[in-house]
Image (cartoon, rainbow, N blue to C red; front, side, top):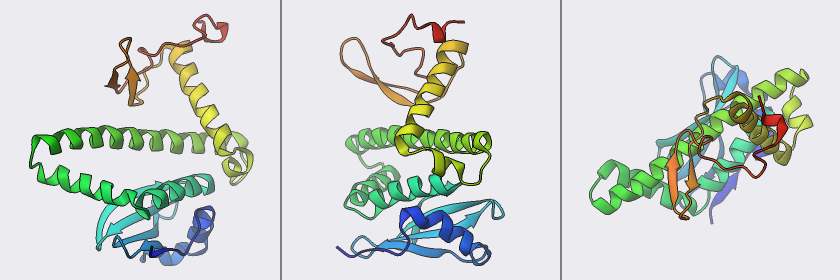
Length: 208
């Protein structure tokens, strides 16, 4: 497989900082896969405050996502590399094409599922980015999120923080997900916390 990685995920943010001036006018190639016609670029965004990873398929942009710090850059690059430099990209691009063509009922059903998954992924990315910024501000040190928290810790903080807001303070949180109902059937819900059943319903930490 003709996969080529010029910049490893752990080095994406550092590479952005080192080449920030040039990236105001130029996109830098950081990975590619000739077998699928995929090239992944890195450039600056928001007047140098953040970066952006851009995925092109046969010279057409098919996906882009901002990165806001070192931890976010590594996490985002790993996910994008895993999706767009592997065989997974075939299904992704096929789903995109099916969405555009809208040729059949079967395609429509596939597109709906793809839309749900995209909506979930985009919202999770927004929540991750917001938590990165929050943790950096709390810890104050430059690059603190990457320094203090590994992936397991980060996900644990996010889950408990959102659950606390929803259960303790009845905050309405948009976090699209699929939930299993009492009959074992999955259904999609954008605001899921009021439908979730928790094992510790009487936990005093969540009582007002």
